[in-house]
Amino acid sequence: MPRMRSPSWSWDELLLICARVVENDWRQLRTYQPATEQLADLLRSLPLHDTAARAIPEFRSAASVSRKSADLITNRPGYARQATRGGHLTSLVAEAFTTRESEMMEAAQAIEDGVSSGELLQIPPQPDEVDIDGYAAMEGRLLARWAIFRERNPTLRRRKIAEANRLGTRIQCEVCQFRFSDMYGPIGQDYIEVHHVQPLHISGPRETRLRDLAFVCANCHRMCHRSHLGSTWRTPDALRSLMLKHVGGNHEPERHR
Image 1 (cartoon, rainbow, N blue to C red):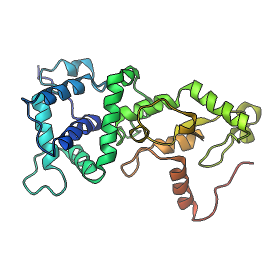
Image 2 (tube, one colour):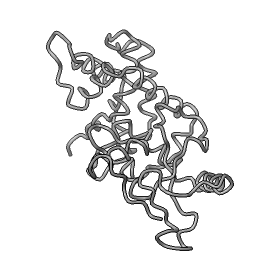
Image 3 (cartoon, helix red, strand yellow):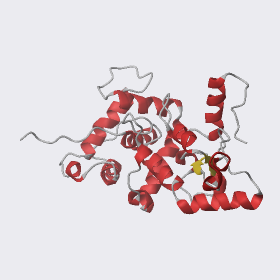
Image 4 (tube, rainbow, N blue to C red):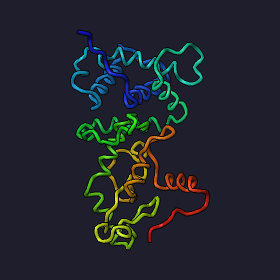
């Protein structure tokens, strides 16, 4: 019977390793360093792989973390010597840390905070954390899982709708202005979905506030999360700009009155 191999590295795992590499001034994480073993323990605790993978002796060991840290270093843009064969995802993560280090460090910290608090470990996988083509969110599958879970919190949605009714705000999609009650009548009254206006790596893993949420219809919500050009997170304003550009410049999309 063939020996089971450790699963491929995920974006989230590479994100955490590269954050430690950056903190180590882009030097390799050594197996004998206590911090490397602590990082290996963190990676083994992530809710990304099944029980069978965790039973593999070398699964996310300190030695494997050390090797992967070397891959990230040598696949960094501008590295002058021979790059190791780290794989395409390794190159993407190394490039992301090179071009937007602050954002990536914040994402890594958000994951660590979520794991240390226990909140992230309790959230079950969400259908949209991996897109229809099978790719995990470039912002990190775990952060996508966390945000989607919060967006589906019925209490938050009810509170957001109640606030809008109290303030006299129209309950309609902030992207396309679709209003369910205009199209479907009473059955559509006070029906809408909500979307975080910022991804968790920017907002941080704090309690969601009502001002963090925007009203979106189901179609626009899916487009806010859909993978395209390396991103799987869009604000309603950003998605609306894409829509206006596609439909022909300065014409407003048709509004349902």
